[in-house]
Amino acid sequence: MTMPSEAKYRELLDGLRASATAFRAAESVDDDGKRDRLKAALSAFERVMLYLVSDSEVRDQGLLNPLGSLVTVLHNRERGAVTPQIDLRPDGAGDKPTGTMRELAQGSIAFGLQALKIIKQKEPSRWLAAVLLKEGVRTEGGGAITSGQINQWRYEIRREKAPRVAKEQYEALRKEFSAIRVEPGVGAQERARQRTHAFVRSIVLNLVHLGDVAPPRRVKQ
Image 1 (cartoon, rainbow, N blue to C red):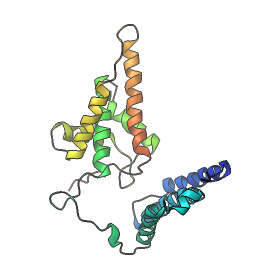
Image 2 (cartoon, one colour):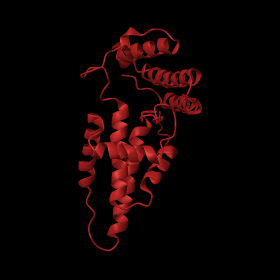
Image 3 (tube, one colour):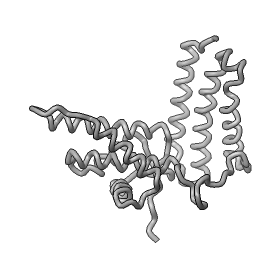
Image 4 (cartoon, rainbow, N blue to C red):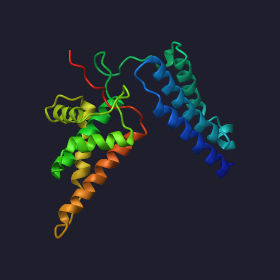
């Protein structure tokens, strides 16, 4: 096995930075913006593959073939070609897709708000929206996530009106958060605040690498 060199790794990081910069600079509100963002995402994907292929074991065993097929499909889609490989029907009941990343994002962000409410954070939805904006977590349409959206997602989950996956993600995070213990005594309230902020920030950071995943803002008819 031939591991990629440190120089190759530094080259990868430089390339990923360039791809990330291009991705953030492109707005996904029209076809040109969507194409630019897809091109940037593909370039990052290809850079990772180029780095890995320098390992003879990866190369000789064809370990990148699954990733290569995905790059081919996305490249053709970026050029506007029909891509039957990813033209799939929803695998659940009915015609509406379920279990999408947007539902995971909705559940995650909604519980982030709930955790902040537990510690009585001042203007919790605004605080969370600011963190999401700072870290670059946006809606599928590329827009900023507003405090109103965050409040609405929590409301839908608590009223059993949200998608199943969003509710399951919310519950999983609730159990994880409830396991966090803060010893009573002097400074307990501040420690609880710090741990909650760290927990919520970890939720946000887990969404960052997924790109634009949150449900788009609803337009009133």
